[in-house]
Length: 88
Length: 253
Length: 114
Image 1 (tube, rainbow over the protein chains, first blue to last red):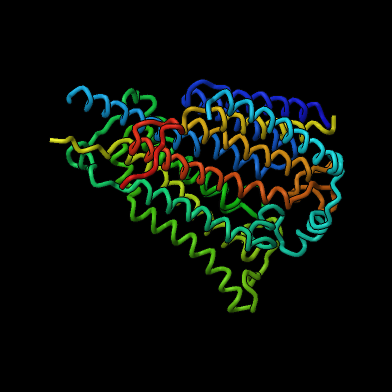
Image 2 (cartoon, rainbow over the protein chains, first blue to last red; image 1 turned 180 degrees about the vertical axis):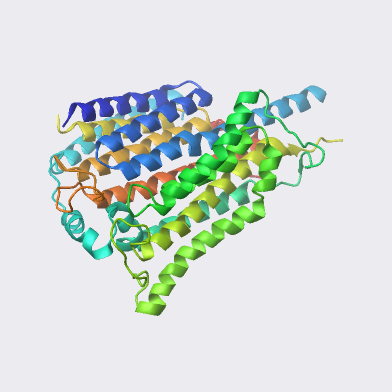
């Protein structure tokens, strides 16, 4: 095992723990993007460039966009709900 | 079950699971000493048999093409599920119309962001097209290039022109594009059945390995999957975008 | 040291499970599921690696060089893209659950009424 592989594995382990331990979903999304990049580096070091390419694209663009839009919709619904309760 | 009880039960179960996993992984061959037969055989004959230098794409669309058919339809089914779940309910209505809110600006979209978003559109289209078309030569193929292609209308949205994005990439066109991609892959398989007698067997002529149209059915299949994946992601994104921006609960009068 | 990839995969699996079990928010559950899935990627690619092997792309190296296993790479590649779509489906379910029940806490979700 090369030094690069050990470093990439360590980064992935730390990043994964970071995603699980982050406090709210918004912070989790950002850490998830970084975790995806660490995974892509790991795949690259394991001689799998195809997989690294698809992991980069998915975890930096594909997934965070959907999570952020879902979070925005949820926050909007919270505000609407609070507004309706204040009116009644 | 209260939270403390749940966490202590989980701690117990996690310890057992960790032990099982460690014992299981210890039974695998050591890291770096891979003994599988299929991989070695394909590494040896892949280039000469299929005239494709990227063996991962060749496996994806030719040797293991049937798996890719199934996975492509998982993609299709999930996006269908998203569209069905996020349909408008009875007590909601669509927000501003195209004429009323022509310049819907994202809060805080500065001039620099807008300029960058507009510049990125042709760059992303070119890179995405390159990755899809060169799948059989270099790392790439339909799956990766399809998502990169899908980010081009997305950067229009980030530049603050959401309603223009809906104009450039309307729902009907995206859904038709996705269905055409999925059906295209199945048609490639059926054409193999019709011309050569076996579903998904290659029937197109081979070229020189390392050139563009060299790998027969792999090129066409990669293109179909690229169209399908980009259509799928764009449909999913625009469903979420519609929910976040356009759909509002009707106020109880 | 050669056990490290599998140890990291087991750690990710259990950390993701902890995130699913201990979360009070449906979106956090869904994101922890992503971590569990990435544990399987690490295992698959760890199994297929060969010491001194190159990537299975023979565009510029002679076709007889030792290469890593391409079959596991195919499995992981399609899985990465599909995981994103299935996560999107789960997020759509979470958005509708919030619309219906007013909260994202898994303990507050009741039986669907109408």
